[in-house]
Amino acid sequence: MVTLTLEDVRAAVAAVLDPELPLVTIDELGILRDVSLVDGHAVVTITPTYSGCPAMEAIADDVRAALASVDAEGEVRTALAPAWTTDWISPSGRVKLAEAGIAPPGPAGSSGTVMLDLAVRCPRCGSTATRVVSRFGSTACKALRVCSDCAEPFDEFKPL
Amino acid sequence: MIPLATYALRLGDDALVLTQRLSEWSSRAPELEEDVALTNIGLDLLGQARVLLSYAGELEGEGRTEDDLAYLRDEREFTNVQLVEQPNGDFGVTIARQLLFSVYQLLVYGDLRASSDPTLAAVAGKAVKEVAYHVDHAEQWTRRLGDGTEESHDRMQAGIDAMWPFVAELFESDDLVAELAAAGVAVDPASVQAEWDRRVDAVLADATLTRPTPTWRARGGRSGVHSEHMGFLLAEMQHLHRSHPGATW
Image 1: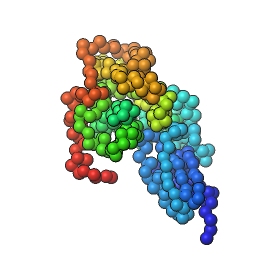
Image 2: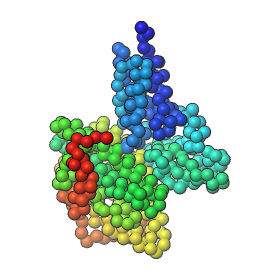
Image 3: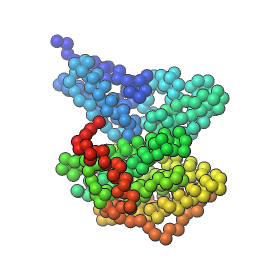
Image 4: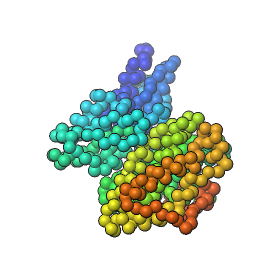
C-alpha cells in the first residue's frame, strides 16, 4: 500500500483543465486556491472567476474525478473571498492564452472598480493598435477586441 | 425571517428580477455584441442572486433553497425595488434602467465590502468588480445615444424620463436596514444618494440629457408592493418550475 501524499493530490488536482478554456489548468487560472490533506481526507478549495460563472459545477466534478484518479477521498469547497482577480493568472497561463489567440489580461488595479484601458497587444500580429468592440465577450471573463493594423478580431481576457 | 435574511433577500431579489428582464434581450438585442453584453450582465447578476438567496434561506433555517425562494414565492413576497421589474421597452429604456440601477448597485456593494458579515462582504467584494463593467457599459451607451442623433437623443431622454419615477425608491431606508447599518452589517441606501446624484448627473450632462423632475414616485417594492408588470414577469420566470415541481437540471 502506497501512502498518498499531499504532493500527489495537489499534482492531480492542479492538472484539471478549465472547461471553457481547456488550454489552461485551474491552477494556472488561479481558480484553485488551496489543497489540504488531513488523515487521508483531501479538501480542495476553488473560487469562481465571476459570481455567475457557469463552469463552477463542471470544475468541481472534474476535481472530484481527479481525486478519484489518485484514489484520494475528499471534498470540494467553494470560497468567494478573497475575490478572484486576473492578477492570479500565472505566467505560464498567460503564455498559453496568448498562443491560443486570447490576449492575456493587463493589471487589474488595486480598487477593482476603476476602468483602465491599457494597450492590449493583438495576438496575431503583435500590434498594440487595438480597440474594444465590446466589454462583454463569448464568456463572462472575456471582452471582444479588434486589431486596427491586421483587422483580426480577438478575445481579450479582461482585467478583473 | 430574521432581519439579516430579509436584507440578503432584498439584495438578491433586485439582482434576480433584473436578470430575468435582461435575459429577455437574448436573441433580440439591436446587435450581436449587445445580445452578448446584456445577457452576460444578467449572468453576473444571477450569480450574485444565487449566493444571496441561498444565504437568506440558510439564515431563515427552514430548509428553503435558492430555487424555493426564486420559484415558489408569490408576488407580494418579492422584495425588489420596482425599477428592476420595469419592462425593457426599447434599447433606450433598457440602458436608462441599467444606468440608474448599476450606479446604485456599485455604490451599495462598494460600501458593503466593509460589512461585518463575512458572507455579505464576500459577495460584495466579487460583485463590485463585475458591476463596474455594467456601469461602464451603461455610461458609454448613455453618452453615445444621448449625444448622438436627434432620434437617439430623444429616445434616450424618453428612457430616462420613464425610469426616473422609480429612482426615489432606491434610496428609501426603513427600521430594518437602519438597524443593520448601525450595526455595521448593511449599507443604508440613503447614504449613497449624494454620490449617485453626482455620478449620474455627470453622465447625463455629458450625454446632453436633462435630469427629469417627475410628478410621481414609486414606492413599496421592499414590502412586496409591485407594479402591474411583476406578475407577468414571475409567471414567465416560475411557470416551468411550478409545472414540474422538484425538477432539476
